[in-house]
Image 1 (spheres, rainbow, N blue to C red):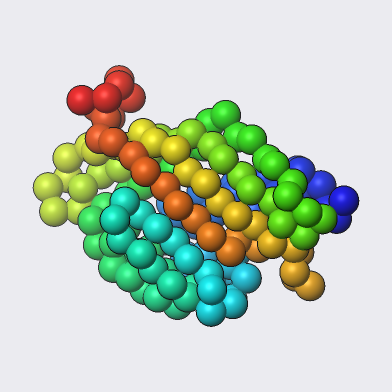
Image 2 (cartoon, rainbow, N blue to C red; image 1 turned 135 degrees about the horizontal axis):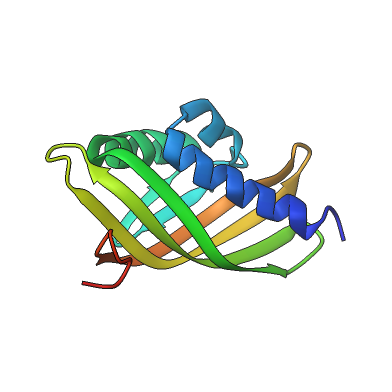
Length: 141
């Protein structure tokens, strides 16, 4: 096998950090950069790393939240081939709504497909679903 599961999990950790910092360059560096990079959020579909960055990270996350922390839980890594891994984990967010300052949270399930490239493991696909939670108790509303 190419690389280790720890290297794969490190990419997921960097993704969680990039969501929190909303650092465009760091976020972009996590993706393969191929035109087929995809992020699916609920019923929204974003294709290509620059569309994902501009429409999801900046136009979505940064526009809606003044702060966000994405916390991964129960990660499972499945190697499909030497160069393709599927990562599945539960997550929750701790956010503050930009417009009102109110706390907000989501709990859900995320799937990432990572591909081994000349730059190491990179994200090729993300799909997640979630439901609003009470940000104080982390329980579903």
